[in-house]
Image (cartoon, rainbow, N blue to C red; front, side, top):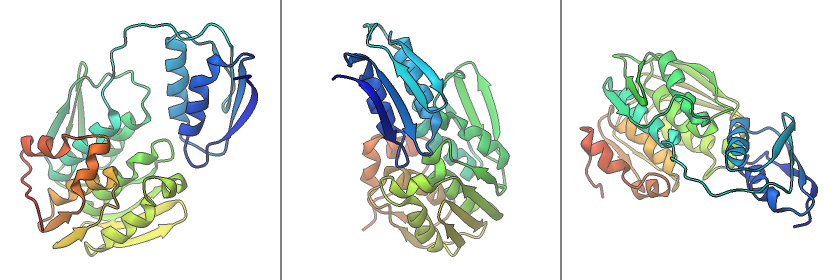
Length: 274
């Protein structure tokens, strides 16, 4: 690659800029990369931090622009892979939904993963958070509280928080989420459609959801649109509300193949539905 100046549209996802950043050290002339549009900037910060750790010269020009030198390039090294904060969020949601407790190990406090911020949101909804070294425990409350929260920095968690909002007595507002309309499915539309099947009032805005929860009722057959995060989020509802069927449960294999086994080990009963 020759290199030079490039502008990457991140309106749909910050992953496009991350991809260009990761290969930029191998451009002959280096690169000046600008991210155009709103995105979850934490993922770009994480990308740059990893590039530097592996030896690349990446200088931040401003909040949305980076200069990548053609040398030095990446150097081989050993790396201890962190826990997946996005997957752990669904386990923490299970504790929040049921009033139980879930502990995730290897959950280092210093992670840059944006979704590691979910426990703070759960705390606002009434959960209790405790840390013992790299082990993080979430204890759910007897009654969830509604929440108003900007999820723009961790948009993947809209499914998780929306599911819990369905169980919380009162009206929750989740916003900063326009980007989620271009994820595996239009998540705002899908959540609004499926949560209404539980008898809930859900108002859908271009970048937000307003959910009045606390009286979710089954039976309800919830479609997942082959979206792993919808399936895992709806599991938290099913653990609390009788008569919930989660369609296409196998879609969780995209990021968490053992999800249903882990739920069973945690005491959640489920069975195949026709």
